[in-house]
Length: 114
Image (cartoon, rainbow, N blue to C red):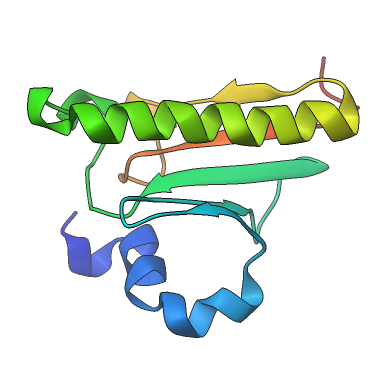
């Protein structure tokens, strides 16, 4: 999949227009975290790289700053959800489970999920 077809890349490139629709948790030049517009849980935060990177397997040593920032944002989002709900899950899908071929993870809480 190239950047032009990627849903998250389209979101990032249209961010000035999409910003009003998003409840943003965190934003920098490299990373965006927002409440999902298509949540599958009561609380569902998506964390994405603003640069198109297909998956965690495509991160390299020169991406160390991005790796650290993504971990920091996971921590920020998780703390926010734990403060509100008492718990959360962090999910990262790979291989056939990764429907969107763009580096991202989910911080979720759903009282119906154990």
